[in-house]
Image (tube, helix red, strand yellow):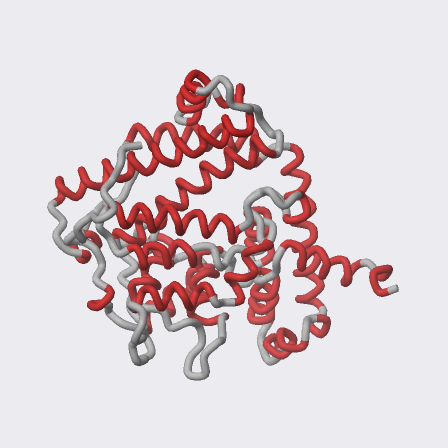
Amino acid sequence: MSSTPYFVPRAPYAEDPFKSKGRRFQEDESRTRTPFARDRDRIIHTSAFRRLKEKTQVFVAHEGDNFRTRLTHSLEVAQVARSLATALGLDSDLAETIALGHDLGHPPFGHAGEDELEIQMRDYGGFDHNVQTFRVVTELEHRYPDFLGLNLTWETLEGIIKHNGPVTNKLGKPSWKAIQKYDNEYELGLNTWASAEAQVAALADDIAYNNHDVDDGVTAGLFTLDELLDVPLIGPILFAVKSERPDLDPRLTHLEAVRRMIGAMIDDVMGETLQRAAATGVGSADDVRALDHALVAFSPDMAEDLARLRAFLYERMYRHWRVNRTRSQARRILGEMFALFLREPEVLPTVWFAKSQNRDEAGRARVVCDYIAGMTDRFAIEEHRKLFHLDVWN
């Protein structure tokens, strides 16, 4: 990986925290932090962020302490985002903030939990983890006396909801009605790309999860180092490590290969982004939003290699029989709890039962969904056990 000077001049298309569009509810500015740094701190202090420590990516919490959780994943994404933003001359606080907040709406049990809540909410307005993340920071977290949510800056909210690009094509989905309603009251420019910093956070997510899923998959024994040699991107890097350092044990070999793969992906994003910036002549943050394509991106060759790597991981990891068993059990746990809470809301904890009162069935279902989505893996397992197994009360 080529070296980059620590100091990089600020890019003309970087967001300026002192020219932020502000917050929906007026507040005095912090004397010690920029608006974006203040957003970061608000996210870190939320209950939703703390609960990420026992929400999983692929493996459920009880399967071992060495696998990634949503919290460790978010920290890795934030580290990559901050480093990449700094190297590109962007606002690193904003990129880090969006990275730290991007997974707050994920339910327990990773994608299995999301899939089950989508099914359970099918007739009640749907479920989408990106929308849930937005609702966490604008509604569900209640830490301040004068407003619901965190009252984040416009730029952070924009980045959280559209870091992957314009979202107008999603607004027709029932699960996205909450976003349309919010946008009607506080316009977020849903038809444009987000800031370069938000795009950095999105690519940092790709970099982090592709690398740590390779790491976790090898650690879990779902595939071997030799099986990775024929996989694009990681294969040539792994071969180079083995050739240069045949003395390394398998653990250090795969960790060194993952480290180098992170570097290769970061270098690729930097090269492609700087090339696109020069070609388009973007001179401001608004110019970035006005483009008809992403500014921050992988090169076509890297994107193709990543697609083939993901195909390998999908076949050998995400749909491995051991993972399938966990997914099946997780979905049953959430499905059974959802049905019980909707049918008998009086068994909900007092605060959540109160929220469910004086609502129609769809409204009660949303309360149940919010309660379940906020659970950690361990809490969901224990809650299900208490609800369906009387022996735990002995």
